[in-house]
Amino acid sequence: MNDLQEQQEIPTVPEEKKPHLSSPVRKKKRNIALRFFIVFLSLLFGVFIGITAFLLSGKYSLLRRTQGAVPNLADPETEGISSAEAPSSSNSAHVWKEGWVRYNDKIYEYNDDIMTFLIMGIDKKTPVEAAKTPTDGGQADGLFLLVANPDDKSVKVIAVNRDTMVDVWMYGFEKDGITPVIQAQITVQHGFGDGMEQSCEATVDAVSKLFYDLPISGYAAINMGAISDLVWVVDGIDVSVLEDMTKLCPDWKEGAFVHLYDSSAYDYVHYRNTDVYESARLRLARQKQFLSLYIAKLKERVKQDITLPIQVYQMIDKYMVTNVSADQAAYLATQLVDYSFDGENIYTLEGTTVTGEEYEEFYPDKDALKDLMIQIFYQEVDPQELTSAP
Image (tube, rainbow, N blue to C red; front, side, top):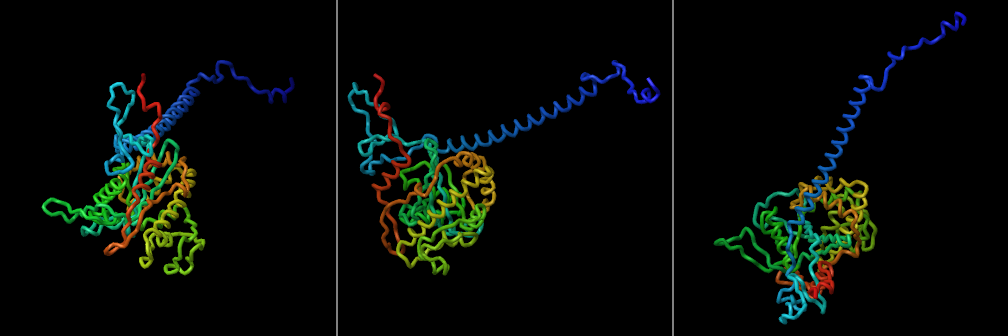
């Protein structure tokens, strides 16, 4: 071997001096990486458990709220619907369960898997604050029952005419410990009270009684001033104007195609020409249209960002009084995003509008209301359940 080869020769390291996998340095690095990975998995698992617990908390608190409650559709005054009794014969195999009703020669039971929420649009543009006088709570110009059915994964909405005549409790006018009750439009019930929880609970009670003591899982009363924020979230709503509204906006002719954003959305759902007969019904049609389009668009956005409902919840919080908590709202968001909904799933009460002493009065058609109750909230009893085992 020449000198150059000797200079280029790479010296060898004795075997005992070579680093091995089991060396302290390698072990230390590997242990650090392992501990980091375990901590990461623990944090990830903790977040998962936390979110799951958060959602389950919302779910079960909602279910407990109406547990065991059923409508009183078999009230003696409800013609055509009866709560049958088991035959008196001791040999009969017929079984009758509490809460069943017979209607049109069929037997139905209330679907207690359904969750129903009352959404109230309050005629105020400002953030929520306690009423200064007993009549300053704000009228509920929009009343919508949102019905979520997990069996067929559908969302249905029932719009309630603001002029529907009901018993209204005049909170704030108590005398000798007794609260006066008057027959009045359901919209004013929210106005009597504190404009906060008391007003909301009184309105929920009025709507529940209108629907034969329908269990209502929760409510949200939203001042109309929140509409601008709500439409901002979905980049506005495109509508075809349902009636001539040029008195409000020159371009809003019947059939015109307009983009609602900010204040224009508020004007569209709030405006009512009281010089026109049944103006409340006409406005309700616009509110139905807007709500249908809004829900559909919001659902698409939620599919892209599941946290959006919580963001909306926080955004409109200052305009809202609700008994739906953040965990309940989060649970509902994860469920309802996969539910079906379209304009065909919005219903209105059939009935008659008459001119009262001062204002228009709406009286629901009882037969149509019973049909609607059976259609949305009840299911036919399986014939096998009608007889006991031999």
